[in-house]
Length: 330
Image 1: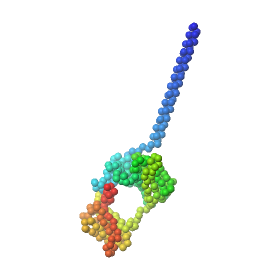
Image 2: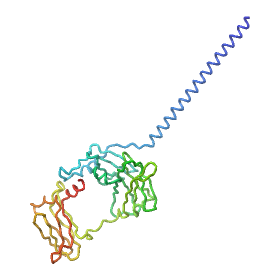
Image 3: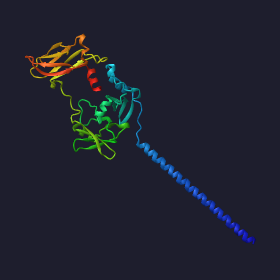
Image 4: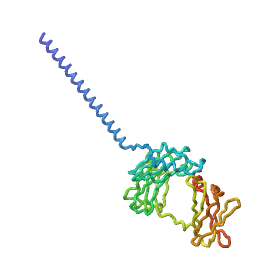
């Protein structure tokens, strides 16, 4: 009997020890699975973080200066007052960055900065402009460019529901996808292999849904970076001289008349007063505006080219810089 009791006790101890080892093995497996799950989650998080470009860093001083400069010389009722204090980066492509400052009416001002921290000029759009432009574009260009020179485009997608943007170089040409930055803003450096096409071809930009459905398209003509039209090709070319601190004033009017048969210009102030402006043999002209009239050009004034018999051959408008800017802003 004593022997049987010892055998039974040995069996119980063996079973208990086996159960203990089994519980430890299950706990170890559970810990390994938990570690694998956590590691997998961390890997996914790291991959997601690597695929998302974070923006929002402050715009440099020269950019905020350029953007705030859009109000220089403008009367108070026409100033846009962009929020340059909170101007920030919203898109990036290589060495090019797009910075934006918000307007109170829901519009914005932005500037592209390209290689070498070179600002390419501020562009502003009011809320009214946004409604009329499904896709905003700005393409900074230099004089005397070659097909190998870099091409950068930036802007904003205004059409609702768009999650993608493409550019096609001419009908049936190559196509590139443009990555979007924050809130529909974008900047894109044309790849070197497509620069020649970009310089020579019509550029067709299309905003699409996540399924590739085109919601809006806009086209840039093939001569977008071609030489400017010579002043001499315009029937009446007008240049005005103003005070950079007050663009409502006009101190001098000058330019060129190319219409055949013109012998003089006539400027009408709109209140019955008129001034005859003599043309030089080559068609150039200039007029120093009398002090009492420098404030009269916030309303466009008629400038007419006449022949020897007094017939009007061509006509254009003369207005202060502030008027033309205000017309766009309104």
